[in-house]
Image (cartoon, rainbow, N blue to C red):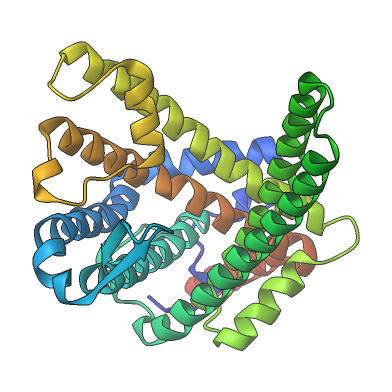
Length: 351
């Protein structure tokens, strides 16, 4: 199986390769996931295994391995506020990030095969294009850095205006101040979602271009931008990506709520009340020392991992199908697939 997506590979995908609206795209995403569930879930399970190993390393080796390279944060009274075992946290986070990107890239390749109507071979998918992983890793890291920078800059801007208002509003009605603070929080959330959605969209198309068209990192940036931009098109693409991720998040939140209720119902020691469990699971509050470890923490952590493993293929399949949708709209990829397929059938009859 070639690493590059060749239209002639499509077996029965031609009828489904057409421009889709948001509802049809989401329906197709779930249909593909359901049809190839075990292949997608098997690939995504690599993330589960990596995260389990990561938390084991952090819990069991944080004090011992990281003790010689601690970073201490001290307050004005010279008291230690917190400390982090840099020696174990930094390489662990880098390794987990790399494994996450690897799993996503394999899901993109598997999603492309599903969109083209091919049978997914997990072994072939895992072996494809590994020599391009470093470029993909660096490019994804750059997207992450730029996204964080923009979010921090947005936070500083919003915080600055909030500070100016609070200083000017001292002595005024407390209800008015609270109302303005609420409005500012709402207007902070909207641009935050927009910024994250913008960069996730470009990263998604970058990943698809690199793995499905065998492009370099620089060419992947340009290719992704070329497929997204256009009058009356870029906002639709970004909105669709945000909708895909919000849907996956909503499914995960519902599952977390259900499992939180079940954990509270069991009455295990250290579980807490329902709201505490939901907050714990939503914020991924993890124990960082062996002495803090409880059976309830282990169950909640494994539940979170299982839910993320289950929902990860949803958004990857979604943006992979959206990538093909853009190629169909801008380049007539569906016609290319049908022409290649007809030529292959004609050659087969001739033989």
